[in-house]
Length: 135
Image (cartoon, rainbow, N blue to C red; front, top):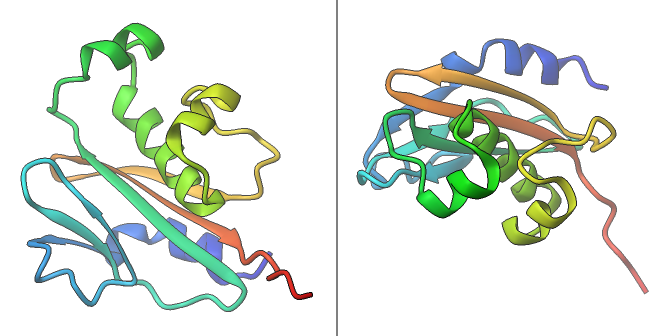
C-alpha cells in the first residue's frame, strides 16, 4: 500500500471543502447534499489509486423504508461508507445492499475513513485502480 493513502485519510479534514456545486466544480470528486450544498475532495492524486467521497447531513431524517430495512443506529455513517465503496467498486447501491447490506466487507480492497465535518457525515475512500481490459 502506498504511504500517501493512510496519510491522506488521517488528514481528510484538510482536503474537504463544503460549498455550492459551482464552487466545488474543480474538486477531484464531489458529493451533492439534499440541501443544495456540495462536498469536494481536494487532496493530491495518488498514482495507482482512485478516490471517492459520500456525504450526508447528520440531521436528515432516515427514509422510513431504509430505516425498516437497515435500522437507524449510526445510519448515516453506514450509508456513506456503503455509498463510497459502491462508487469505488462501480456497483449500484441496490446490488451492494443484496451482497452486503450497509456493511463494508473486510476483504473489499478499499481503504476508507468516516468522519464528521460540521453538520455532515462524510466517508472518504481509496481503492487501487483496476487494470483495464484489453483485447
